[in-house]
Length: 406
Image (cartoon, rainbow, N blue to C red; front, side):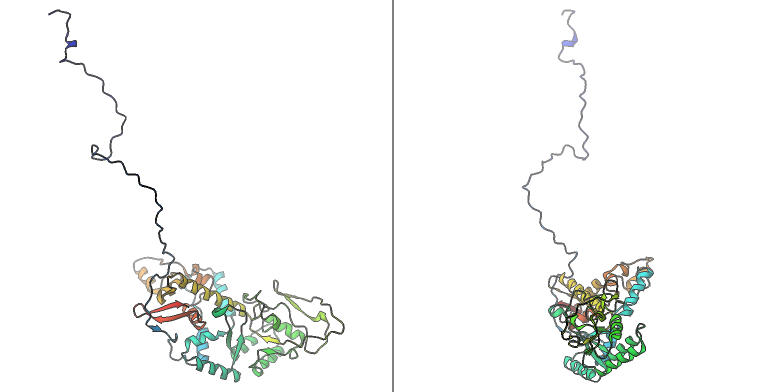
C-alpha cells in the first residue's frame, strides 16, 4: 500500500457540506406538511340581490275581521258641537319637558298653535259620529239657526284628497273678530252683525262696508276677494299673514262700495311679499259701466292657509307611511310608532331610568312630527284621513286594529 493514498478518496469518509439557507417563511398552521388543495376557480356570477327591508313598514297581510264604523271612544260624542270642541282640544300633543327644542323653536310652535283658526273639517266630524245622516241633519239645523257656519274650501287637493268644506261655530268666530287689535269697534260690530244675519250666505254685499273698512278687514284676514277663489298660486301661508292667509289668495282689495263711481285710484292692492299696501293706477274707459257691484266679498278667517297646509301635508305623510308596506296596510300601533318617530314612551323611559340610563330613543324635537307638524297627534290625523275616505280602520282579531290605504 503506497504512502501517497489518503483517506480523502475513501467513499466511507466525507467532509461536511455548508447548509443552504432557506428563504421560505415558517408556516403559521400547526400542520405544515398537510396537503393543501388549490382553490377551484368558478365562473363569475352576478350576486343575488339582497332585499332591503329597513324602510318597509309591514310585509304581511293582516286578517280583516270587520271595519270600524266609528273612531270615537268617548260615548258623549253624539252631537256635532261637542265633537267639534273635542277635535279642536285634541289636535296637538303637549310639549314634552325634554323636547330637544330651544326656546325660540318652542315659542314658534306655541304661537303657531295659538294663531290657527277654530275650524273643523266636515269629514272629521263624520269619522267620530256613527250616523252620517244625523250629522248632516244637525249641521243643517245649526246653520239655519245661526249657530254654525259652513266654509267652502275650493281648489284644495284632487279627488278624495280634496278638502271640500269646513265648519266653524259662530261664537268662536265672533271671539276671534273681537280679539283683533287692528279693527275698530264700529267695524267689529258691523261685521258681527253680518255673521248673525247672513248665516246661510258666505258672501257680503259691497255696499255694507266702505272702502276703508273693506281694506282693514282684508288686511286682518276676515274678508277675501271672490275673484281669487280658484287661484292656487298662494294657497298656503303662515299665520300672522292675514291678507294672504285667508281661504282665498288675495292679490287685490275691493275697489269701492257698490254703485259708487269712485275713481280707479281708490283701488288698493296688497303686496304679498311685504304685506304693505300701495295704490296703483288703472286707466278708465269713458262711458264704460262699472263692474264693482257684480261680485260680492266672501267671509273668511285669518291663517286658514296655514291650517290647510298642515292638514294636507299630514295626510300625505300618513299615506306615505302606509305605502312602504307591501299591501299598503299596517297595524295601528306600528303606524303610531312611525308617526311619533320612534320616541320612547313614558313606560320605556321609566324602565330605562331604573337601570341607571339617562337617555332612551331620540328627542321629539328631531322628528318630523315636531319639525313640520308642530306636535300634531296621530289620532287626529287618522280621523282626518278616515273622514276624507283615504284610509279605513279594521279589526284584525290578533294584533288589534289595522289601517289600510284605499
